[in-house]
Length: 161
Image 1 (cartoon, rainbow, N blue to C red):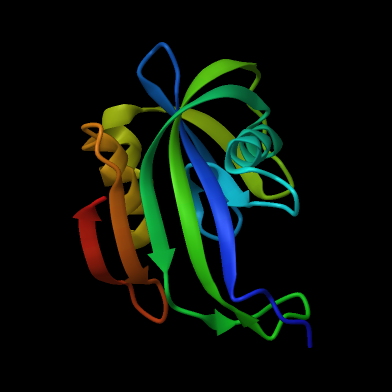
Image 2 (cartoon, rainbow, N blue to C red):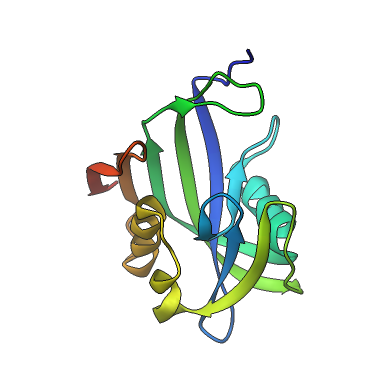
């Protein structure tokens, strides 16, 4: 069995366009989410979120503000030869649409621009709902969440940092 590091670092982006819509991707494992994923070796957070958004949607962005940092402290059975999936630390950024045309990817069935006030109707994951609410409520203070996602979502910390 292979082992992950003790923490996985991820970066995600809530992408806004000039029409007040939000970029969402319909992930094969997780439903509708804002795009993001693991930071790769020798990659910084800004490059990671930019790359992940491009890979998952075909959209180029300008990364603006950090609005949320989350710790998913649950671990669960691994996949693809990994024994356990460990704690994740997630950095969520507000991004602005720069260019590109929507498309799906090998990680999602489709990408779509969704009206900001309708996005919560699409998201099913409690953790993604909380993180998107942090975006909606962003007042310049970065939100910090600590939660477990499995077997059942439990929010332990919800505060500004």
